[in-house]
Length: 199
Image (cartoon, rainbow, N blue to C red):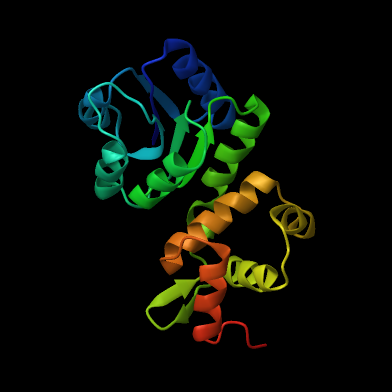
């Protein structure tokens, strides 16, 4: 299994590569300057365990690279590392299928924790799923919905579950995507209309 980093800025690419080698010493880290090099790298280095992509890559329009990668490897976590502030860019990336959006200005320890969380969540997220009509939720996702109904903030949820706020954001983003919603309000509307808030 290999971890792929695609960023045209050499210092950022090397820093993320070093970080991944510390997090996953048994895995191979493949650093690429251009998105166009990815296909050949996948053939040469094997199945992906994680993708870390810069959003603004030469020759790539918007979030098209995210859609392409997720189309080929839907189950592989994909992290977007971007110089652009969160907001519309983050929403566009998550909409395209990214699992996490991190600003490059984020503290290294936070980036490390967030990527670690994403890697840990793979597989665990789908265990013990609860079917709600056509939608399947993990126990953690059902738990999050109940916490949102109590009006808890990300910080409150992090404290109650003994996880980082970054991890809470990751869980919420995945929950939103699973339900096909974009906000806490829409999540609660979905939950009420599907009887998820009944004890």
